[in-house]
Length: 74
Picture 1 (cartoon, rainbow, N blue to C red):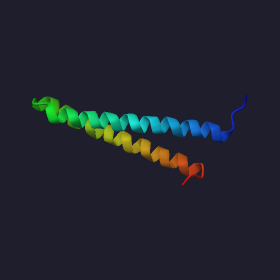
Picture 2: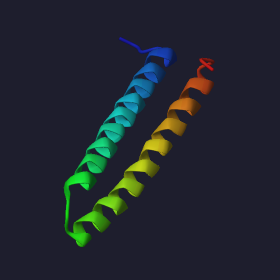
Picture 3: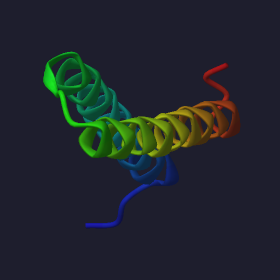
Picture 4: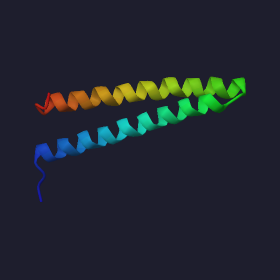
């Protein structure tokens, strides 16, 4: 069975959406952990991870927007 371009693009967008929501959940968990930790080293590592995940989250969002524009869903 041959897939149409629209079907392939929808799968790509859905995958990007899954990544976006996973990154958002991870960011939330890191911030929750920051509320509980006491060691300075652990806090610094969590802050570093928050920055990394935040960047990944924004990157996934930008890819989702680009995918939607390419498909005329803007």
